[in-house]
Image 1 (cartoon, one colour):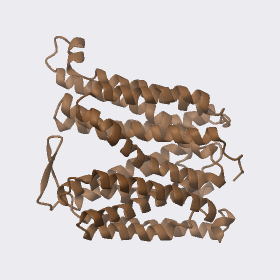
Image 2: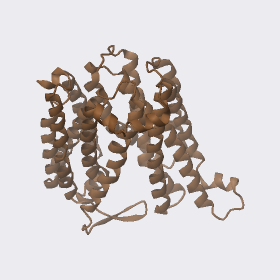
Image 3: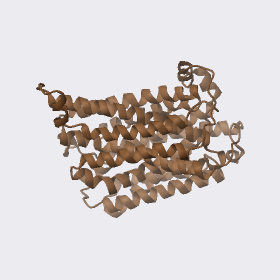
Amino acid sequence: MEQRNKLNMRIWLSFILFGLAGQVAWAIENMYLNLFMYRTITTDPFWIALMVASSAVVATLTTLIMGAWSDRLGKRRIFLCAGYFLWGISVILFSASNTSFVAKLFPNSAHIVELTAIFLIILDLIMTFFGSTANDAVFNAYVAEMTTREYRGKIEGLLSSFPLLAMLLVFGILDPIAQGGKWNVFFLIVGVATALLGLLGFVVLPQDKTKPSTTGVWANLRYAFSREAFLENPVYYAALGLLFVVSVSMQVYMPYIIIYIQEFLGFDDYAILLGVVLIASSIVSILAGRLIDRKGFLYPFPYFFTTALVGLVGMFFVRSMVYVGIAVFIMLASYLVLTTIATATLREYTPEGKAGRFQGIRMIFCVMLPMIIGPFVGSALFTQSDAVYLDLGSEKKVPTPNIYLGAAVILLFSLYFYFSLRKKIGRGKLHEREQR
């Protein structure tokens, strides 16, 4: 692959600001919109489920179409900056999602609660459209195009740590506001910060290097799913498979880990310990990125694959808070590094000038499908649990340690894609560093 110029400070700054802000904004949607609807509009789980499902569909379709369109126009900067600005504005509008406001719009309606729920879902879909355009489609393409080979691991190690750091920021700064019921302030802070970042991007981001494609949007959209693309980019699809398996395995336990700690283990004062674990795991991810740059994309895989299994097995057996903290650290840090390995390889071997159209297939196989398959497998592993807890008004079963063994079994399938990549390395398909 053609060598690009080394990264300058503006590019590093753009990765940090837009990458972390995007994860914070997504954390708000994933963790707080359900709570907002439950506490201020309706406790009916149907509306919450409808909002989650419709948002997932819109996010996937948006990434597919807007990624292909950004390739067609050869524009990343305008999509990224304008997308973040409008993303922020759409978050601010959530403060209007209340029954009083909707009652003024429909004074004669007897279904104000239902209309308010629909209004919130529509706003969520608008926000999802702008967020997926800016972050899922364009930012990921921007990272693939602007990062040089020498810095690929460092960048991916940093980006892989952002979801955990975003959780810390949200819980540490914004959660007290939400728990206090100050939702207008909550959405205003997040929305204004995101919108201002979009405006700042016009100053910080360098000009586009991507040239407009000669093919249409539909042709761009189809290409990533075509046999032609698969044959032309075997390393990309092997890395995609690796990331898919790692992501599915992680989603078997990740949606339930806090519930497991609270309800199964009975730990209440775990916040500080979890915060330390998240920070330490993020540091390991960043340091591993540097190792990848020095030794090669696949060098750390056997070590962190092994430690991931150790952490998962540890979580199955341990019960004391200290040992649980150690096991969670080993497990999360290992998964972050495995994700870094896969995403670094994925971005490095994204076809030149076609990064946008490949974000849709990445979204499907590394976000949407893992978030469907993983939790389904996880929940199936504790269906026999007798203990229950309440979640937004619904009675649900308490997760059991079986979820960690299930995740370990799924992770074993990643070996197929690892050895597939090693085989391609043996044919000289990758850089010399990976052949050693």
